[in-house]
Length: 318
Image (cartoon, rainbow, N blue to C red; front, side, top):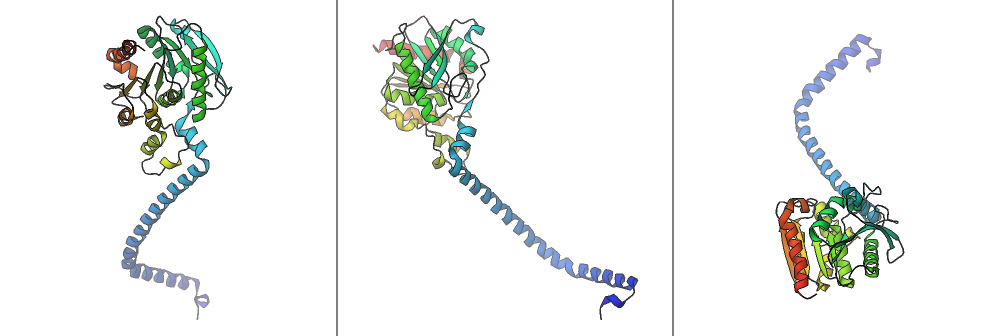
């Protein structure tokens, strides 16, 4: 017979008594179940982490160009924050095509010597973020300098890509060789960070007077492995910038500079690239420098290393 025929108060009392009995009888069982529950929670958490990693890998596989390049490689800015004139430096605003016709923008600063410096900058900002460095290099070294923006950066047209940067550098090199006020046989490539990879690629096809690589890395896959050490992203990176493979084709005199406190591109990657390069070559460690403060922290010894390299090119009869 069910509880429905009992007075309401008695039904409530019976239920309370039953609940108390269940509670008392279940304490020991609950303790045993708690341990198993926590174990299951930990297993579920681990499975969730593995699933998240798997989803990230799938995202990289299906959208690796957009996911990796837009969020890891290229950080262009369109607005120019100033010009060399703001630093009292005379300059010429120039425009020229990349080898595929994309219109590029840059600044040409005439120096006092015979050497022309083709500056291939890093992956962030634009040429206006290098103004202070431009002024110091020009005053200290007296070289002609072409500083330009890759496609998608500053006032240059298009969208950035690995192949695009190669075509841009080739267009800049062709532009310099077309000028009547410089010696086309004395063009030095100066590549910093990602620009070092662009300089290496250009040097394999157009041997320069000299090659200067600052804060270079071996390949984008090596960089990705260090950024995501627990994920198999190295093989997913379509953008290669494989300087390690290309540098072996270069026989131009080379100077590599790298800060020993660089937490963006580890010093190890710079030394690995240097070791793979052919002679003649020189490595200079910028003591105490990180990734973006090389010319500031490096001070007098840094600029002396650059001067000595340029002098060595002249002494070599080049």
